[in-house]
Length: 89
Length: 166
Length: 152
Image (cartoon, rainbow over all chains, first blue to last red):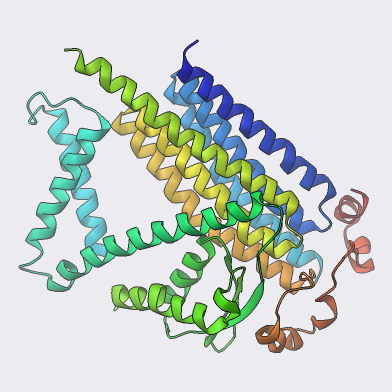
């Protein structure tokens, strides 16, 4: 295992710690918009993990997954925001 | 704006065909060489606009300079917030300010609001109904003065956006 | 032709630097998500940090693969992320203001008072510690969402 692969694995570990911290905010977040923000950060972290995994396995087909995930993340946060706006009016 | 898109698509197709039919002569098909060829084609197309679209000829360097300025702002603000998160005490001083807009059209206002939203430390909340003020939530104030930050936004972002969309 | 082997190593090193920088930005962003006291501060500080980190990681991957197709896909993802992140932040922020999520106690709201008075939101602001209030209308109208918001 070369230094390059070790660096990539360190990157994945850092992203996983990010996911853990974001999950804490998702659990304790006092309001609903807080949770939507945490969900946004979730999606960003998962895209980062997929990208680093693509580089680790040297198989560039996984980028399409990241592309589609970024699309769905945006749709998810926008629809959550509209849902909150409608539900409290 | 439309001319820029047409030029970019033309340059991309030209680059693709040049590599497909091996006109480039032994140049390796990598990202760096493709980017260089794309930039060269765009440069030639930009030079050609001197004869039929003088405003585009003058605006493209301003656009590039604006993108560089924006990347610099992004990095500086991100490092500032990162320093604030790591050190134990906050130096933030949150303020909601009413920023008087000079921009009038939809495109200019949405461009300004989105660029302010992309910079860390500022978040555009809402536009008033008569489109004269933009409410911006900011974190850092120099010398505790709102006017200083308003001047910075006016001279840094809004003047350049107005120059570009004029 | 020992230069070709050399270029591979250079690409790996540059890619590693980009990816570590991006991961550091994302880690700092998630620590800030836990530390900052108020929803608006979190929103304006954190989402952009993670966006910049994602852009750095994607650029690192494009540099490592060095193929035009991969570069095009990476540029598409970066453009999409950078266009949609401020839009999502703005929509969520405006929704939070109109639903009366409280500001931090030290926030200076001098110039914002007119807007708040107009939308009758002034009683919500400037509470230092705020708790989750589920309005009764929300519980009646949609049981599932009210439960989800109330329980956790």
